[in-house]
Image (tube, rainbow over all chains, first blue to last red; front, side, top):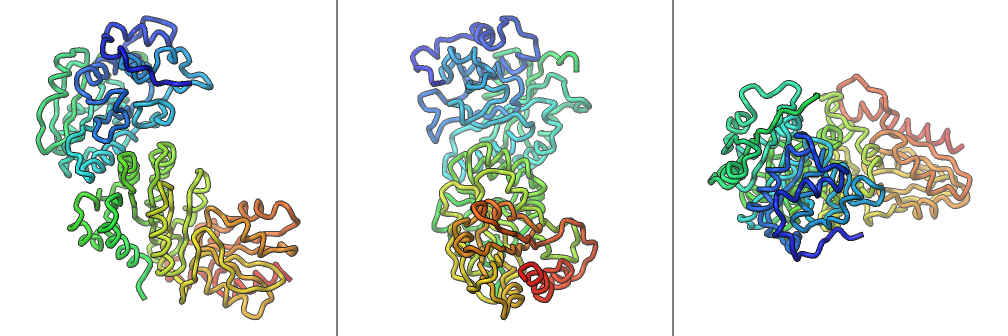
Length: 238
Length: 297
């Protein structure tokens, strides 16, 4: 089975097409806030920020996007399908034995997926290493982006990565935190404060406002890594 | 004589000059000795501080970017503490790194249990496709480190120890070396255990094989040495019996017996020195002679 759609039409897809693509996986065109908490941030990144396409998904100077919060990847798969990385015809196989699309993504099965995730707290350290590796190769232009959840941020491995990246001035590293208030004990004073204390550039925005997301994603942050906390509706039933 | 760890710093510092793909990630341990290398290659010698999850995660990311990462700290903090990172950030991502440990099972007995990692090789046995080198001498360590750095993108574990043999063996990575030939059974000595095994089997009619690489396990080498009398004693400087399954699999086509000697599973709540611990574990020459002879005769 191929997951590489021909790169003919992907850029013409629209945000409004995403619910139907998600529906191919879930069998339902209506999705609650939890299933779509990442959708707007992912769309703005892939539509307007990341310099990566299906044609250059293996290029060494591409931007990297690492989905650390691998739970609930339907929004991610839908965006990848809209952008031509995944053939939409593959979407209905979601979760099936022979499907490349698991309930957690596997980089070895899907073109354009940079990491296999699912266990929480692995994406940010992997992104730190990726940014270090690009810098060591003299590739100072590609950006490394990683998406984490506010509950995922409980994992201590994130604290290790945030403190190191801030102290090291790893300025090609970018994090987007999808904050749907799902962390069991919350984050007193806000998540951005954890990054700010370690020397990061920070922005906290409405995670449904595409213009606000775009401004935050493209803000200058010389010499410092950058975090965008995207606040969305609180997760229900947790 | 220098230690294996000294040699690791020397050879890695030299190879960083020659191979632009190599990158070293440290977590404070041995960082001072790498200062000259870090000054020459600030982007390829990175000390992340006392952060071992990040140590392995960053190594995985470096590998994803196309580098050949080398991660180093004590075995307890390289394999046991960040084991899920070893499983997911290297193996599951489909990338490779060279993990180089120090302190092993009993190198700093005065440091106690927290700095002892007799289960590291057994843990790696739960994951696919690892190469595991256990050199017994600094010259072997240099040879195996050079081999590991150039070993494609494989995951390789190099287990360095302060416990070492008097003389290096001419080893071929991945193959057991025949050190002594006899007819009443085979004793396989792993890495630093060779000197004690040679002393223990002096005058005994046994074959002594030497392994500085234990994974992949040289099944053909063991089968050839065992012949019809397939009585095998494994002497390993980590958890007793770690390679017993490998030996059984190698000899599954013939009747055989395997005795696995090594560091006991039980916690040993004493401090002291390496020789005191080897004696307590039954791994010094007199105890080994007794245990080997009892099994074979």
